[in-house]
Length: 198
Image (cartoon, rainbow, N blue to C red; front, side, top):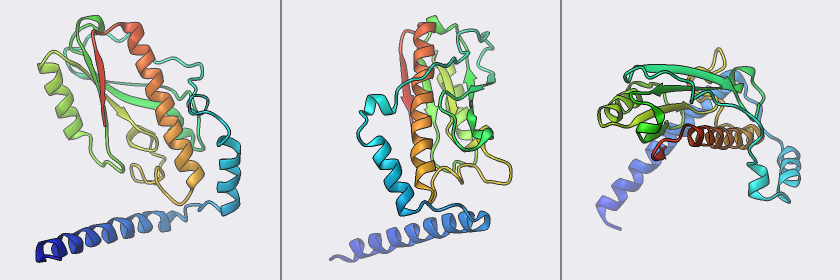
């Protein structure tokens, strides 16, 4: 093993240790529920026999994108009920910042999704404005338990990944269903092209 490989390994272990210790701190201060083995097995027994399509099936819902007025690239915050409610009421309203510089049917659209425990939307808003300058409409989506969906007293994303494995699975399921609803709504608005970037 070379010296450089050893240094990379030490650096990786240090970063991993710091990341997991900080997660433990955030979860410890609120005494976040940890799933028991029986709860995880029960959840698995409920959903393992079901197809992926059924697990992520799009329920009825509405995303009010098509009605938005063009605002020349200024962000418009819109919220609407999640098609898949979870355990916290604050998390059950989808939030997104829409940068609409041209009518939907005249420009492609890019959906931006942030990282876990993202603390600031400044960089994402900058990317959205850059997209607008290049003739692309942009959406910055707030994922479950982050930003506008953060329960009071918690940091952004604190509840997204924890020892509560049922909440983790349901949060991912919620995010997938919401993204599918947004994409379906965009199809109604008929942009020339759409893409998502996580």
